[in-house]
Image (cartoon, rainbow, N blue to C red; front, side):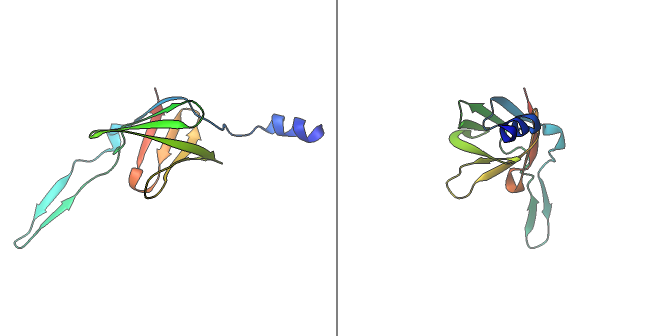
Length: 113
């Protein structure tokens, strides 16, 4: 019984999310191309590739992107949301109840709407 009270007092992270998290577009940089005499060098900023994450139910998420929406499932892994992908998973770090930050290719700061 003491252990149960201790766990309740300390708290455990949420095991599901709800609502829509929108990417902060202010950190996105414009894509640029540098023309060299023999080639072109292009820089593309992938910040906010996913413009919104819409969490519903206990494990469903819809990722909204400019070219369409993709539905998937997710789990909470300590301070991370791990969204199942076909090639690899997408990681979002839980900063607080209203803020998620994307990791690696899915860079971006997402605020709850």
